[in-house]
Length: 476
Image 1 (cartoon, rainbow, N blue to C red):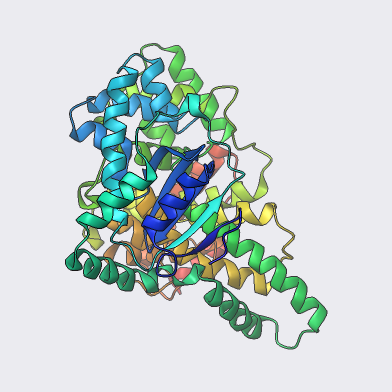
Image 2: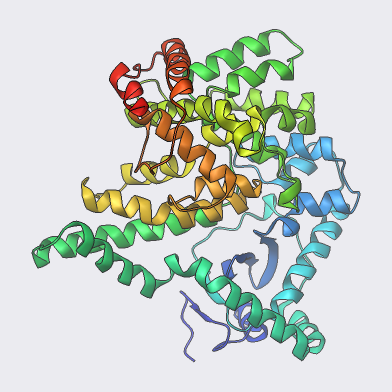
């Protein structure tokens, strides 16, 4: 096999042990990414030496490892992660700058995690890998490791047995359906299927332009699904309210709850941070009060301070698309809160489920801003086609509870109580809904009350009200 600088392939063709030795012997620098289904791992190299290893699955996160090993308490880790998720500083640098560990001590802990991640990969036989020699590894931000490619390869192959190989194959088979929307062949097939369903007859030149735009979009969605956790910017009016809270030092965390209720991105930021050290998603928190209780006052204060800092981007009031999404989120949240008990959940959780149901729309629409992708039926179909798999990936990356995954990835057919609740909530206020509406039965006695409450909140936020006829329509 001829190897070039831009190396990519599959491990059944070029084994992991050979890959490590090639990187070391050729003194390579850059980033080596490997993926087997949901499990994606990053190996950063500098002059043939492994500088850093990380994984995307919650149990592989450095913060989780440090918590489990007793190296740092949860309260300290949440504060550090709040800074990590709102800046370009990685966690290791923040730990050292804050004096929370010594360089030697942290190196040992990071190397322990790195060895575990690397040895597990010797059982991978059907994974994909890609080497980016242009990625600039910054050694002063990393922890130097004593790992050597050839030594690891020898030990890894020695430890590998048939049962590990069988487990690796089963994981890949389980992941194929989940990962298929991002596979090259699936991407091409999906393009022609969506084009045929939405555009009918189309000239070859126009089809070629759309194909190029679609491939760029699919690549960007995949990058989005694989990126590390980061805080999303909040609305400018939200930042103003948070600044007022900070003036009343010390910050009262409970005062953040009503502010988050009107901003889906602030709510999402709090849930991402609160669940960053969770491995079992069934025990992840799903409401802002629970998130604040888990984080503690200090970490909440750090997060709020960073979100309103001058160097952190915010959503301007003039952003029409963001305002439309906020309108859809808040309206669904209010309605879902009112219907929540009928679907076996609390009003607070139902409200939060409704508030976050548009997050994938927001992520994808943000991508469309940066691409030359003409608006129309085809683009709308593309959004719906990728919203579901993206929702699954993001829910896992953010460690959100399973019911939130059901909601943000719902294509209108998810049978769960949570997804049914939000579909009903959206149908109650159809004038605010983003995307297709399912045929859900709504309570005519609640419709007018919900509409009045939604308009009251919209007036406070400066959003256009619901038209009366679009509220009363659901009664008939």
